[in-house]
Structures are given as structure tokens and as C-alpha cells.
Length: 326
Image (cartoon, rainbow, N blue to C red; front, side):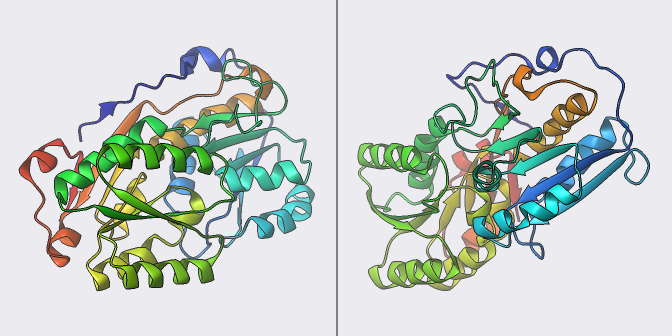
């Protein structure tokens, strides 16, 4: 499978340099994986992290113990879990997404935290800088504002008639306002009018989809985060029923039946997070481990969905796709 290099304007120290020298590992290493995803429909992120730990030589039940805490689509539920998480006495917490990280910050958790967030962690106040995070948090930022314009360009290549696009997003997500502003500017350049639907729960998603159906929007652009991804299959079912294509930035969205994604290779990011956890388990301080950025992006097209909603994917798009779901 071919991958494209992702170049970002925010500099980060090379991953191998950032991790530094190792020391004696505490055994067993206890990790709390904290996510706002639903337990019955988790993404591949958890398994990718576990795979990364295995690649580093860990065996669960021997020198590694991982507890997964699922927020069931709710930041508030993660906050309610915090006392139980702390009672389990983890050595490191892995915050999967900005909402999970925000919940840990609001409840004043001081344990070492490794994160994956799609916001700029400096602008959000999570760390002091990419090169010197300071405090007790570090990880990988999926800050991908530079990919938004290209994502909309691919949409226009597939659906040249698209001039009314619905944007659906979780307003509680750190960086959402920046993503919204960037998307609006990119859409204006492409002659696309947008309507914005903030949604904080399942009921608001239902209202948004009903409005989109009534209004006859040409396409849906979903802002990627764990909360949005937890409803990827619901959005896909709506897309097929209404014949309205939906796009996003993470592969799971297309795997769940939506038309297309263009964004970072998320599973690679979560495998990389394992190295942060390993180093902290060996005594490294999060403050000294630079925040990393994705190194790969992918274009994934669901050809099965395209046929079902009556779209013909141009050959130029298929040739550029890293993956085609048939």
C-alpha cells in the first residue's frame, strides 16, 4: 500500500531523537486507555496501540496491563470515570482524542498523559510548545488544517455539481473553531456554500441529518474526532438512504460505509503512541518528549458506496487513492 508524506508547517523533533535513552522498566506497566468512543463500536485505535506495544516487546498479562475506559460518546462520562481510573493506579494515561484529554484536564489529573488530539495542542493550552511540552502531557497532534482544502477539492472532482455542503462537527472539540473557519474559507474558494451543524449528542445529530435531508444539501463534510467517528455508521446509513455523499478525514469513516476520506493514517499514529508510553514507563518525563505530528496521509475511497448513491469516481481520483473499498 502506498502512502504519501505529510508535510506540516509546525515543526517537530524527529521521533527517534525525541524519545531519548531508556532506563529500567517498571513491571508490569499499567496503562489506562481513555476514549469518548462507544465500547460496542470502538475504532481501530485501541488495537493499533496494543499492536504498537507488542512491537516494542510487551506481552499483556505479563509486563503490561491495559484498562480501556469508554465514554460512550460523552465527555461527561469520561469525567465520571476519573475516580475509578485513578483507583486502578495506572502509570500512564493515554487520552484518545481532545474530548478525553479535556475531561482529564478538567478533573485535574496529574499523572503522565500521552495524547492523540486533532487540535493544535499549543493553541488549546495542553502543552507549552511542540519541542518542549512542559507539564505532564505529550503525544501526537493530528492538527491537519492544511488538508481541508484538498479534501474539498477531491469532493469537487467526484461531484462537480456540489455547491451546497453541510458541515457537521462537535463544538466541544478543541480546535473546532479553527477547522470551521478554514473549511469556510476553502469552500468559498471553490464556490461552495456551507451550512454548519454543531452537535453534542445523538439527538442533535438526528436533528442535523433531518435538516440536511429537507434542505437537499449536495454533500456532508464531517469534522473528524472520536465523537463524530462513533456515529460514522449512522451517517453512512443516512448517506445511502438520501444519496448524499459524506466525507471526512479518518479512514474509519470510509470503512463504515461513507464515500471518502483524506487525512492522516490514524492507526500509524496510535502505534507510535506506544513508544511514548514505553519511554515514560522507563522513567522519561512527558515534559521532555516533543509532541509529534503525523508523517503520512491517505486517500480512501469507498467505491461500493459510490455505486450505491449513483456516483462515478473519476479515474484521476482512483489513481491517487491509497485504498479503494470495493
